[in-house]
Image (cartoon, rainbow, N blue to C red; front, side, top):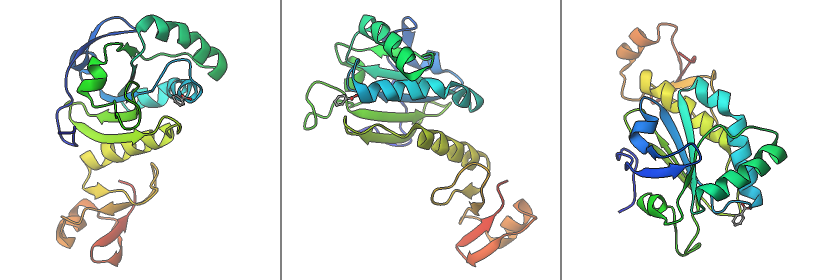
Length: 209
Ligand code: BEZ
């Protein structure tokens, strides 16, 4: 059975480039972007981890911690970090889990044998402060992920957690939102006194709360 949205993210202990961690304890009180990459010293992975490091302030502003994993060991990660920092002009400020025995990769089903029977695919788990899995993504090794999209999704989830709204296609922070279809017009009028544009009874557009 695969890990699904709403499941509790499995806890684990692991060695990382920031020392040993117990996952739930490490992330306590924070959202987490937990992502796998296939292999150290590979080109796409180098750009992905560099970009994630460059987004450090953006993650911090959203109370998000990033953590990466691959089946390489911590000493390989530490050697590779120098290359990431030099080539991507950044400082890798988040931990990378060493998982040569594939314990964490197996727990999170990050090895897809039909794609590659030893290396992790490019998985992403976004996990909230209650340790619930809120988003999963799986990309093939040859395609780098869009970490701006990961920030965008976090913005949407954090907004929709605290407001009775949903976000439309390609929405970005600050743009108009959709009033939750579960609200009647009377209830919506209380929560959105500035009103809305009723494109259809089920499609009511209002300003970003
Ligand atoms: C890469 O990061 O460039 C990569 C890693 C494994 C397979 C293919 C590409």
